Length: 287
Image (cartoon, rainbow, N blue to C red; front, side, top):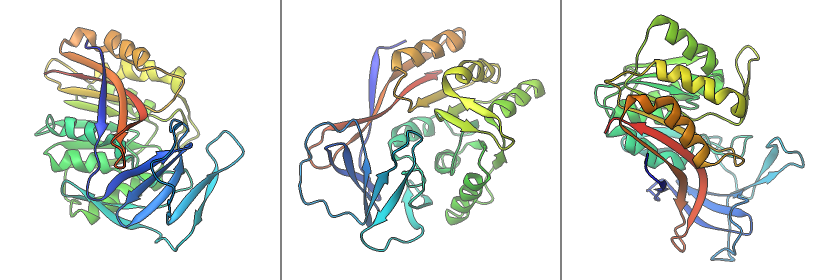
């Protein structure tokens, strides 16, 4: 296992972190600019002339509520792209825009290992990662508990001209689905887990990261073998540390050999080049 590593999401044509500070961040998503809360941006911003198209105003509760305020009309959804894959962005009620751009270096890392691979994407959301892996030659099983998110994933596949690709779109509880795959004797070359801190399955199943992550990871191990290539785990819960999830992955997957990395994910601000941390990760690879 290596020491702590920082992997950095650099700006690309359709996305970038323009500036951040005073507990907020200014981003561009194609032609649309937005301001969202960012507690880790504790410094002063580089600019004082922010003029976004929309701002997310958080609610008073601790459950992530809030609302978008549009300063100029914003389309219900608009098209973005990366590496030959197209997908829609939108102002969601959960303060994000329908995908997580800080995942881009993880996508790139997995794409190098994805050709002719069977990959399981748990908590797959709107499918941007699945489509990028499919574009790199993988066969995907995409699982998410939200029917709406899975339908958005199918829409993104259609937008990308990838409806005929080998992607199974499944609405299911990640824990239950993985356990069934173990019983079926399935195996995968790669697994991506991007679990929320808290969530509910399609039949009301409750997911709590601190309680359910270790058992789920243990089942994921049973889906890997000596020919498997990678597992990526990303966590956005601030009360956990990279050291903690790194040790969990080490103890669970250590007998497979290979390399285990852990550390922080960050995005590079365009104004000054500073790094804004967003999440922690641990990942295993054969090479």
